[in-house]
Image (cartoon, rainbow, N blue to C red; front, side, top):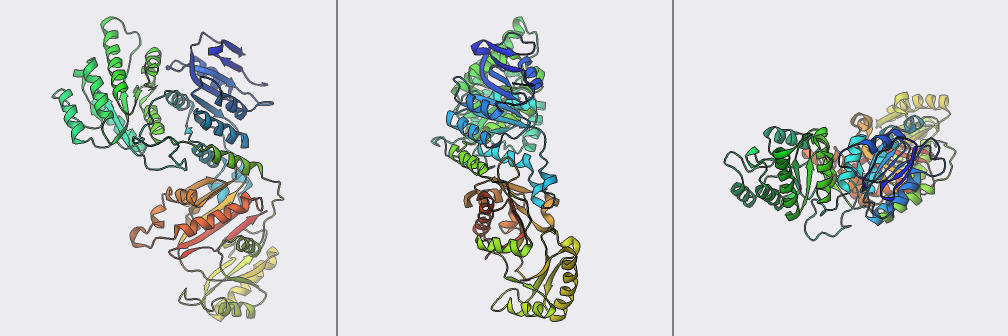
Length: 585
């Protein structure tokens, strides 16, 4: 393990470690880190975190983080794994994530750094929109794993995932594996917050709103039950401020947790609990009674209970371990606690077969020469693959261009006025508009001739030709692109045309893609209302868009191209058509 600290396994009393190491209790969380210092700091932390295994993988000269993850997936006693990654892991990571799904091992991931994909594919919008980090994140979502934004969150997510309780938010009778694992979806149930502080209630509510966590209104039956338990100064609401008058009342606290957990709209109960250091005597007894009340209530509740301190340092190591042993995970810090709550509520079961199919597609990539096709050749490749494109032809002079105006519009009912588009088609030009190489809406012979003369001159400068196409009917502009430059080949979907990079709003689907996954990704876009007929518009044919996107992705998944970008695709109620296209072999 060159340039790595080694391996520590407290449960086996193994320490192949090149740094200072104190006594450690064994636990159920594993950490695989490409950073030795992250591993050193994690072993030194005191947050109720007990490790099964810690591996600092170094420069991975022989074994990779994916290899270690694959091994841990079948390791006895491992319930969750935290991954700190500096590279993408390749197809082997897909296999390892599949093994974790098979073994019921939860995974949380922190991926640092960015890929040079944006620079390599600067000639295509999709390179900037969906660099390796975004593709990697979509792969993590496919695996049902949790995404961390920093090391603190990574360790807290892994710790909370390791505690076995009923799946938060899953309605009774919903079988494991029923979730699709295809990206964000509305949470089936919401979060209830319980605290003894009005200030904590307000902070919790504000942070929950920023994270998109719903704090549902409590049912009449729940409010009635809470009213029987609460002092007169308290209000039965969500968040629930039970006030300090109930502090240390084991029975009342347990029944409050239970009542919140039994509310039909609640999928997870989050209790804020702060424990100062150095408690002794009656004070220690008081805090112990609070923990006892929470643990008893959690045992009676039909949904999971999570404890969180409001400040990270107010989570006592021993108390957090005691709570975890009772089936109540404890997170350090209010904001992180709510992030853990979101991860637990949003957790979906990954599909190991799907992950292995993604790995197979990634391994099927063959070296390509990186040659760009001129647009007329790109359109021919798309048409051959079943992707709808406008009728078009190459034109060599003004007379042919004028004839194209008539002949490409024969028998067409739309647009009302027959029109054509003239374009520069050249292998070394992907952004024609910036050069003035596109003329739209040409509906008369003089306009066609003038545009032809201008674009023919550009074609001469760039070694290209002039392409005439029928003017497509208006529609919602989308970008549909597939590329194989990331950790795995992926499909990128978003609003297109002038909005592509301005909105930076895309969905990413690892390949292979299918119609259902594409539809789901489209509906996660902030711009999805435009596709559904918002503000008096017409809903587009999502099935047609999804079918087009799958055919585009198949060109990359099948190895016929390294990148295919259609921007824009015009989508309307009667179908979708790729009006501009770039293909790189």
